[in-house]
Amino acid sequence: MAISYREENFVVIELGSHTTRATIDTTDINRLPTVAIRTRAGVLKQDISALPVSSDSEIVEKQNGIHANDMPDKDEAPEASVKAEEGDEEYMDANDEQEGSELNYVFGSALDTAEEGTVTQTVDIICGGFVSDWDVMSAFLRHIITKELGVRISSNFSPILFSVPPLWPKTDLESLTQIAFEELNAPSILIVEQPLLAMYGNNAATGLVVDFGHSATTVTAILDSAIQWSCIAQSEVAGAAVTERLHQLLQEDRALCAEFGDDGIPVEFAVALKESGLCKIQLLPEGDDSDSELAFQGKKHKVKADVLDRAARILITPDDGKSVGVASLMKQAVLGCETEKRAALWESIHIVGGSSRFVGLKDCLQTELEKSVLPSSNIYANSQTREIKFGTLPDYFSGWRGRGYLAGFLGACIVAKLALNDSKHNISRSEYNDSGPS
Image (cartoon, rainbow, N blue to C red; front, side):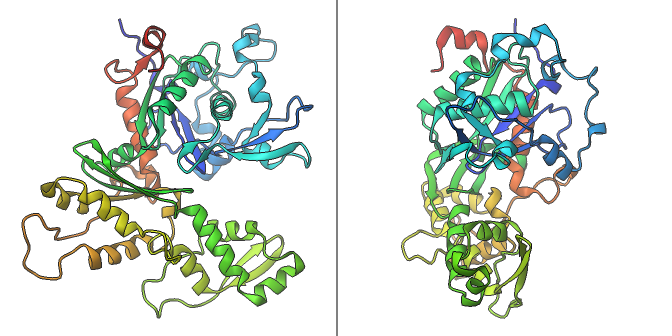
């Protein structure tokens, strides 16, 4: 007989190359993710046993408008998410103690505030859409489950839905499954590809998902809720490339370089500028050409509008002469599908990912597609595309309004709510014990 778990125990984890988001409790779909933590680890010196580990959840909850009064009281909280009282012997179980591998790393705000000299190097856990070190990933997931979400490993009653990039090989999915059951003690799990979840978040089953990530831009064609694996196109021109290009353009500004002195313009300034929201793509040459101002380390610096436009524009039309533009990636993905299905894909485009938030990006992409995809004649064949349309979040998800880039996480919460208690879709611990991670 299948075991049924309470929805307030359901855990959703979306693994991203820059930011990993997570939440516990899917009873309220309009609730934004409570955890947003950089997918990066700090490697501690061998002679350091531990650093103070703090949670990023409170910061995210404040940004999302979630307050402590909105969270369940301690007495009402599910058993799996109640933190230990001091002296509670049950919490001294060996499974709840930090393992040796976890003690070697520090994550989140603890990494940002670590004292100089305590961290030997920082490691990006996911590079180019793939996990760089599974030992670090194991410690990272353990940190999210125990420190950020407050779940006890020794008595874990929280089924987990993992949202993963679409190109992970079978071996990576097996490694994730092994960590979930052997390190996190999960009762059951479900692993779903991020493009499919983004479609569900936008209430669609067929379409073209364009994920502007940190280390890669991925285009995925989906027909009737089925990913077309031969129709996935990827480019390295993504958020990290925007930062690099922006830094190059800033260094060409002599007046700005003089303000920073002999040390030059630090990369951190380019990152702060990109994340400030000042970068925007101008649709017309005669657009707003006024300089923007950014405060950095106590000083204000002016940046030319042309620099902000050119840096963000490489996501649509790269200027290095080698990289393929996103419009070409989309055409490559669509052309791999059946002829009669192609028009439906162009009429259901879904833009997601943290690097898709640049002002003017969607309008610029639409202009580019209309020039290269739509026929120049008014005479159409049945298989030809007549219109370019973009999918959006449904209006009834009022809590997610203006956050279309998070459609994948919303879709993950919806799927978790429907499938984590359904034995037809998830993998239970008993099934794992019988068959292993494969």
